[in-house]
Each structure stands twice: as C-alpha cells, then as structure tokens.
Length: 279
Ligand SMILES: NC(=O)c1ccc[n+]([C@@H]2O[C@H](COP(=O)([O-])OP(=O)(O)OC[C@H]3O[C@@H](n4cnc5c(N)ncnc54)[C@H](OP(=O)(O)O)[C@@H]3O)[C@@H](O)[C@H]2O)c1
Image (cartoon, rainbow, N blue to C red; front, side, top):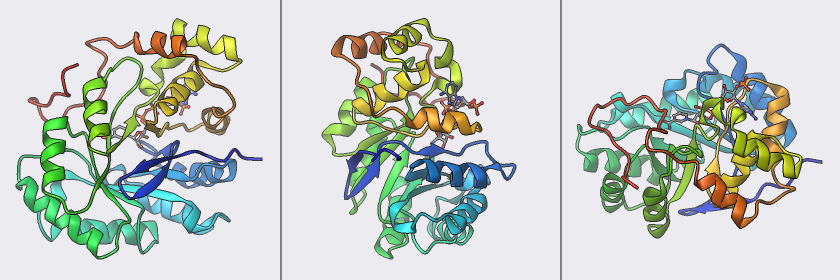
C-alpha cells in the first residue's frame, strides 16, 4: 500500500511534500519514470519548459490510471519568455504538451532584470486569473527580489523553488519565505547524489535502517520543506518515497544542519552577479 503523503500549505494550495524532479530526463525516459512514480504513490511531478520533457510527462499523465485531480503538476516559464504575451504563449505551449487544461503550479524559472518584474508578474497573474494554473510561484529568487515579486502580485506566491540540501544552509531565505507565507521547495535536494557518500548522513541512516538519501529527504520534509528528488532508477524511486515511517530526533536534525558550508552551492548560475541570501 502506498503511504499517504503529507501536504505542505503553499499560498492557496496544498502541495504533496515529495515529488519527482524531471530535470535531465529528456531522452523519452520521463514518461516511464513518471508512470512508475505514480504507481508507487507519488502525487507530485516537477517539470519545466526548458527541460524539454513536458510532452513525456503529458504522455504519462494520459496513460496513468491515477486521476488527474490527484496529481500535483508543476511547470516553469523559462527566462526568454518573460515579456507580456510571450509568457502567455509559453504557458499555452506547456499545457498543450502536458495535455492538460490547467497546471497546479506555474513558476518563473529564474529572476531576470528585463523585462521589469512588474510586467512579468502581471502576465503571471493573467494566466492565474484565466485559470490556466491553480497557483503561481518563483524559482531561484533571493529574498529581496522574492519580496518585490510578492508586492507586484495579486495572487499569493505559493512557493520559491531553490537549491537546498545539507551542504547549503538557506536559513535566512527559508525564514523570510515562511514569514511571507511562501513555502520552500528544495531543488537538487540530494546535492545531485553527493549525499550518498556522506559519513554523517550514512551513520544517522544506520540508526534507522535507512540510506543517506532517505535521511536527507526526511530532514527536508520534517522542516516542512517540499522536496523533488530525481532518479532514473526504479529502485531509487521507491527508496526516495519510503521516508514516512521514521523520524529524526532534534539532535540528528542539528547534526545535519551542521553540514552546511560556505562553498556548498552546486547550481549553475545564469548571472555572475547572482547570489543567494547570506546566512
Ligand atoms: N528550479 C531550478 O532551477 C532547478 C534546478 C535544478 C533542479 N531542479 C529540480 O529539482 C529536481 C532534483 O534536482 P536534481 O535533479 O538536480 O538533483 P538531485 O535530485 O539532488 O539528485 C539527482 C541525482 O542523485 C541520484 N540519486 C537519486 N536518488 C538517490 C538516492 N536515494 N541515493 C543516492 N543517489 C540518488 C540520481 O542518480 P540516479 O538517477 O542514478 O538515481 C541523480 O544523479 C530536478 O530534477 C528538477 O526537477 C530545479
């Protein structure tokens, strides 16, 4: 029996705390993996225009026996489509590829100086008002620009999807998002697989009969952070989902928080001036 997945409140919507990330699954493999994930009990899928696999995710949504209303689908608008009109066309394309009339969450993929944020937020609110998405949000927005986006938006900012794993603290951004009612979604939650070799995470896992990856994902969901690990392996799909039958103690959580380091960032930066909030 699949576990019931806890939800995280994000603006006006409830988001399943774990989802399947699909970055780099662009060789047709996303369809089978999404179908397998849904069979295992996953109810949240994360894609993006730029991932080049929305059509494969759409094929999985069409083929699965799980009803559309039970699946939380997120996609993202790439930065070259942020102008009025372009953004709406990007969303129309995403919906066509995904074979759905509406997604659950639509994110701006990265902040960008031009066009003005107010223009892009107005276009994002336009697709929200037209019912093309149940919620809107951001990705890779440090707190200052997140606050500007929220101020320019009628609709609540449901989430900010950011790099977050044991080696990157993000405590300032997480606190500010929480205070604003915006959930945090962790991208590269497994530090792109690096957590598997970590001695502290491995040791904590041994005490619970779990792997370092499972400990990491548990640490995120226990904070109320939404997490979207990606794998090509059916065995790891099941492993990553099997995190709801144990809990980390306060001392274990603290040991994991202590793994953060100043050079822990992994993400490619599109903009040399980009920097996360300083912790
Ligand atoms: N918004 C953004 O700008 C942004 C940026 C990056 C990512 N994302 C989203 O976040 C998702 C996840 O991030 P990610 O794909 O960068 O990395 P990730 O989920 O942190 O790590 C994926 C890597 O870890 C391995 N792995 C998976 N489960 C494992 C486990 N239990 N133990 C050990 N290794 C494991 C996978 O290899 P195998 O395939 O061999 O299992 C893969 O190489 C993406 O797919 C995407 O949806 C968003």
